Image (cartoon, rainbow, N blue to C red; front, side, top):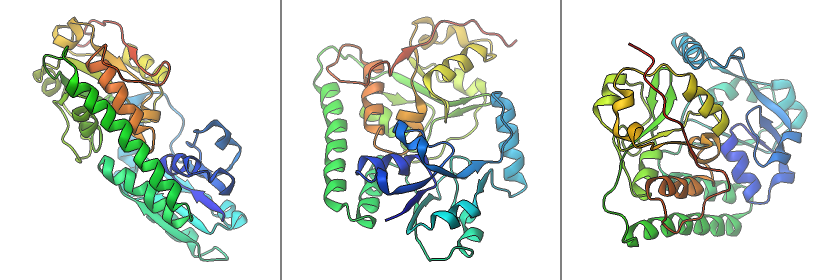
Length: 312
């Protein structure tokens, strides 16, 4: 089977199911596992390169307002690869290529590949996507085993939180998916916060992220803040945090005064609806409740330094 994956999370699922050799086409953002970088890129961003988050937000809004996709599907590459299966998504047209982006190209292909479109909003949807991909590729048993493993990982974290005698209260947590302008983290992240023993003060389970005013964020007075910019690794998130112009009142937030501002590799553990979300739950729990017996990937949790407010 020849498979083209038009979203990074599907690429991760395919490799987790032992289908790396069957993957022939990927997106420019597919980077895990590292060996995937040798595959041919069939989807690229149309956005000009910039590290300015405000500029990225402005460009995305401009494309969206014009009804244009921010992705370009390489029709020539797809024709050369002649895939049997294409996996895309219809969850977020900012995060990955959609069926609409693919539509015009499909008519030019020699064959008629099967197209699977994923649309997860909750962890159970992500686990079901693993089963869907497993069923479409003849890896049902391996997919079922992987889902059992991921569910067990999450259940173990929740059990550790529930049984710990050192936890007096669930922290009130603000998860920020973007900083300029600020967005809360949505979809499965509020669910992950709850499973890790926290209370999400900005998001609601299964609901997409939205742009927020800083005054609203400040009004929630979170005990802990988690910086998880969509598409960023931990180093880039930390750099973005250091450069952000925070409003007056930021330095007085309980989370900031207590030094409970954290970050991680959002790309790996929070943004992408793939297998590593299970590790994301453990990472959150380790930040919320230091000392509980959970295992997290090496160097996956970072504490951000205190910063004074910059914006009057």
